[in-house]
Amino acid sequence: MEKQYDSKNAQLIEMDAPAPDCTGTPILLDDTTMQQRREKVLDEMRHDGLDALLVYADVEHGGNFEYLVGFIPRFEEALLVLHANGDAFLVLGNENYNKVQYSRIPAKGIHCPHFSLPNQPMEPHRTMSSILQEAGIKDAMKIGMAGWKHFTSRVEDNRTLFDVPSFIVDTVRELVGKEGSITNHTDIFIGGDRGVRRVNNANEMAHYEFGASLAADCVLRAIDKLEIGISEMELGNELHAYGQKNNVVTIASTGKRFENGNLYPTSKKVTLGDAISLTVGYKGGLSSRAGYAVMNSEDLPESKKHYIEDLAAPYYTAITAWLENIQIGMPGGAMYKLMNHVLPQEAYHWGLCPGHLTADEEWLASPIYKDSEEVIKSGMIFQTDIIPRVAGYDGVSAESTIAIADDVLKQELRDHYPALWERMMKRKAYIKETLGIQLSEDVLPLCSMVAYLRPYLLNKKLAFYYNHGR
Image 1 (cartoon, rainbow, N blue to C red):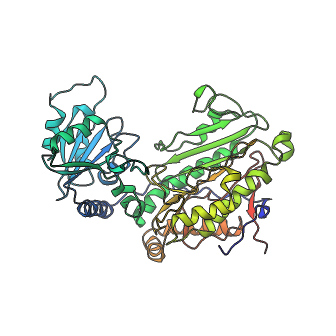
Image 2 (image 1 turned 90 degrees about the vertical axis):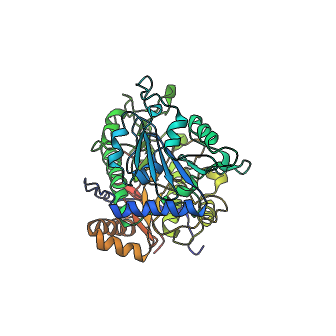
């Protein structure tokens, strides 16, 4: 590691906030992108020798299905049956069966009332077995199953673990018989160095930037509105926009969190010294900020007056190191090691991956974990997500969304999405010139809030700057 990092260099100075810059106009995925997605999945299926891949979806776990089909089944369940020869069947419930015509890949629809809501009509009265047989599942087939999770246990056979309902898995197992097989192949989408969804083209990056930038603008709006006496629900109202679907539970919390098991904003009002947590995520990215409802350290209780030195500044130093050092070709284990050097686990008690991939879901997967040999690639979209815990203090967070891009991808973005490119260049300039972060050349900020952190949330001007000592 060439650069040295010292939390004393994370300094609070007065500065202008970044300008909100979501366009308010979503970029849709084009037909070329959808065709490329289909071909990438088929290539991986053939590599694994699969006869068919069954992709399960519900409203919470629809990303792999949506990657090919273009939509989720909303409040129902669904199954895409994709054969190695390219034939596809969409197995849909009562209220989504009419969506077959909107599939982004050619597919034949099969009505499956088993996927409908409880007590809805079950006509036609068919067995699950007959429905799957119509979708081409038969004896001796080698079947891959994809839910939303590939398992990475070191003590189990991960191929035999499924996050798909048993009434589907058991039926498939019966149909393929002893000569066939059924195994978890969600890794085709999200696993290791092979997962097709881990890397995005220019069109996908423009598509996901909309949600990432919208989330950041909402959080900026909320922290600007934060004041003594405002309620969680009023803050929560600032975190929603344009009727877009959230990909995580929205957090607008003041004081003690999770009282009585509650996850959602209430009428509780902000009081001086409260811990504040604000988070919203949309398809493409999430932004989160956490700190205290104070103007300065004098407003904090005596036991928390060293919040900046003990937690916030070391955390911001880690965010700086992350953004300055991530690059194409870097093994995920190297970033993990860097974070453990800058923000030692034994002192700051972070347990999750320090940074993870995002897409339709907030957490897709992560190449960043201990001893990981998975490589950082052009086209990856990351959440700058590090969660330290220090006894006696509440949280700190400056999580937002960035992309990794090589020269080829950068040129495609310049050529095809010049307005997006201009936004990203303005964001880079702000991060470098206003925040003092020597951003990696491979990083493209997908929102205005990357690395912007006000730890004293009543002070609208004071934010972190990283001083490299020049």
